[in-house]
Image (tube, rainbow, N blue to C red; front, side, top):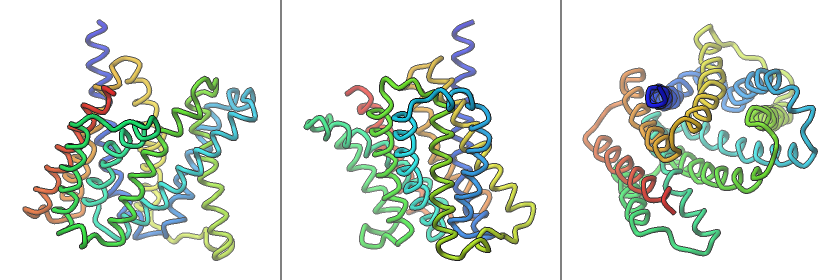
Length: 291
């Protein structure tokens, strides 16, 4: 029975990887209907409302320090999505899905660096392979466009987020649902301030069709709320390493769905770059989790 539960949990994680892989072409499509800031605001405002209702009791019982830590993490999350969403508006969904996966390489570098240690040799090799993949994908490191560089910075910020979350929330009694609500509310609040400061209340008005709002709902309900809960539940039923490996399939799904949904070309260079990035990421992930 336990083995069967573990199998279903791991299949669910593959579903999360598929959903997150789909988020890049979906976000790319949504940006045809609304600006970057507006898309981020509505995505996280909906997330904050839903998660706030779910975690209402936990939020009322939370200590001030825990809420401040959550808000700080929300600020980092806001920076991630500003860079990532602006990046996907300027580059392809394929490049976004593949480059963002480099966060799994950056994370052990940051974690070992804070301990003043070098990562294991296989992690260094994996990083080299993955960076070579980015160069092949873009036609050379000097050919990286503004969108690619923004996504690359988002990948670095994701690594910062992982390390900061571990440090700030260790020993905290704030539930995962409450933390998500605080982070989402922070992102929504910061983007709202930017929108109002730039164009006033009229900046919130969007002439989007049903498809545009469906994209917002998908990004919020499936890519943020649903995926978050499935991943955390799966870690309790499987090992973090196995979950990490399964989540490593996200760029493959993103690559395939960008080709299927947006007709982005699967050129030989894109295929070679994708293979190198995924191989380097898996090598770094496999050995980084042992440190």
